[in-house]
Length: 104
Length: 125
Length: 171
Image 1 (cartoon, each protein chain N blue to C red):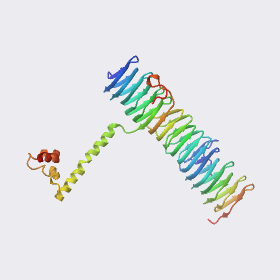
Image 2: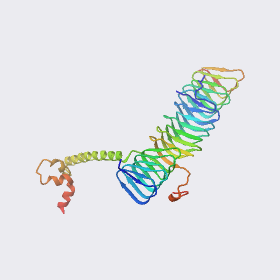
Image 3: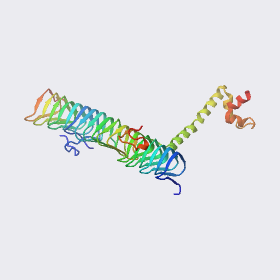
Image 4: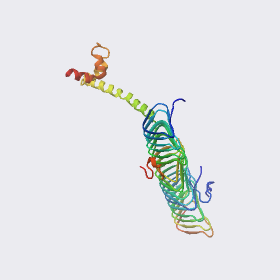
């Protein structure tokens, strides 16, 4: 099954529900729920709550994040919001402001 | 870590088969819809609604290819191509409209052109 | 093969073209076209008429509605102002249309569906007459069925239109 790619230059506003991986290079405003993993690339802008199995952040996200498995913030990532995950890594150079709940 | 979809090339966006969007999608570049969208679609590039995909929305794009089910008006700067597997309900507007036999269509086409003078000439009907 | 009627390119026909067989228009027609076969509007033809046929192919110019039992096809170069209605509709790139487009089941299939529905209606009517007989209310309704066996003279009239026959007698 092909995943979902929100390319650079594309803006989505609304509720996105998926049962596959989602790759965000563009802009997402609203809500994203997927059974699989979400990757927010450098240059992407996200203003949304996200629920996924795992999340990798390389870009900007303002919203609460819930991951069944893991959340990884890459260098250059900016996350403003709460994180709920069983595992979390914050790389050197990543920015983060919010609460962390690792008791899933 | 999410797998990068093989469909990602620069500005090409894909709404995968298992994905449903309730809201607006817009921007530059191409968009391929394999899942479903209910809301609004406005992209500057090519919009492809794949077989099995569904859009319930008015759609604006540079060019449009419909192979799935679309309920809403289609407005394209360039060509609109309705393929045989398509189910379309709404108005179709573009520089060129083509419909393959086999498609299920319920709508209106308003191409801009002149009729020969014997049949009314400009702006007949 | 001998069944194709051709309206030549130098002809201007005002009126109605009806019938079986195929039709090819190369000239100018103003009126009404309804044939059972295939209709071809050639490149350069000028038609101001509603057209109905089994299959309609347009390469020229038509101002009128096109109704195809099987298909309506606009080839590149066609110019049509009017509505298209057929089981299958094809519009090639380069064909120009101003009008509604509606793909649908052909009339023959619709008629079959209708007669299917008609076949079902007598059944409810029979059930109703049985109910009436049970209530003892409208014996004449039941008459059509129950008196099918007994003495001939009365029965045929009752069978066809029991109420109408009784009304006649009353007069």
